[in-house]
Image (cartoon, rainbow, N blue to C red; front, side, top):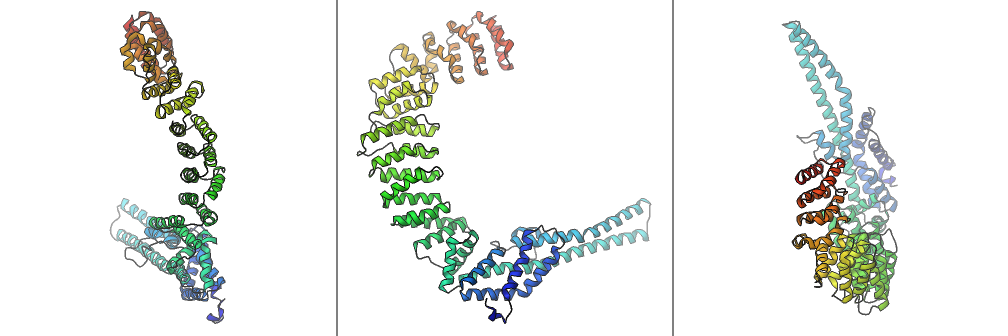
Length: 595
């Protein structure tokens, strides 16, 4: 390859040999003594062959032959990449090795690592000799020696310390010189990129452009940097896509990457060819993990080719391992672009999305189903309604909430009575609670709805009871019957109003002593204490065995407030088995107050 330019010599072999010498240092521990000679060989060879190597690389680029371009890429992959700024340089007056190790990249790390190894070989003998001389000096001082012997010993120590410093300076100078030479590897790296940027032959230039897509990640970096230096402007959609993708993923600054992403977004929005979107742009965005821009491509597809988008969204929503961000975008595009055109198919896709494993996808599907176009067939609307009602049981709060808000009187006029029935017969308390929320938010009162809500005031779950009470309030159908009114207040957890009601509130309070939620039991006990309900002393004595210590403590206080001495035996029994000191103390205070 190009031997005729170099009078029969083989600069390619020399250059590869030089790079192979460098590669040794990247693959071994730097504390090996034999690396000193190898470093000397590398710096000597680099010093003598540097100009020839640059000339050979320039000749390869000038030839424009594809094999020569391949060779330059191969050289780049083996050379160390320079940091963005080279500092400190070995010629700087404030140079220090600690900063050089990080500031000068791989070359700084290698040279400093070997320097430390050499210091570890050459410095300890000096330190050991100085230590021995100091020990002898101390012995002379202990023996009270003075005069010539002592002075001579001090001179010996000073001389050795001077020799030590000279040795350190010599090592430092030796390795600064080696570092200075070895930094030329970075020059070779930059020269390779610059020569690639100057390739003129069509075949050579195309070989560089092709690597934006087909090369290894490392080669893509080299191609991108070379094309950037050349001021190359992409012409075809594929070239724009590949160049912007490389820039977005490989740009040296966050601002550069963001600018490239903006260019990709413009490319997506300007595309009018559905085939390009589906077969070129979206797959490449997926490969690079640019999900947010891929999501924009899906939306654009729905704008320019609804039929093809329907097929793509069907595939997407039936694949479990696709990113949630894409599925959410697809669901949004179905709502904005496809629902009015293909109501039946779109609703089926949205119902499918309500089964997705990702919570965000299910939430978005419920939100889209809140508004169906007028041309939606009744049976399709009924299917959507039933699936949303089913979603009221979902394991995620956000999905239950979205489904409850989606069930509205305008889109689903039959859902009110259906929710009323669901509220009374559904086994899942989450389902009952969010059915009540849907009725509160989106439906007017009907006899069936009001009857169901009033009956559900006695629901065993406190969250359901509260949601039911709020729905009755929102629909202005709060019960006027005194007993139901108190049950409503209990469901709404209006404890001060129940205290004001006095003993008439006891029938609705007593069942709540066995509520599943400790906070409800706690509030009920406090209310019973405030109204001094002697009728419930037996039930409160039973509650001294409650599983929650705060409830047991409140029961003791309530019994003391009621002032019924018959509770003392139960309190004493509870004291004997109570494990918490603070609860025991409250029970003991109650006994003293009642005795």
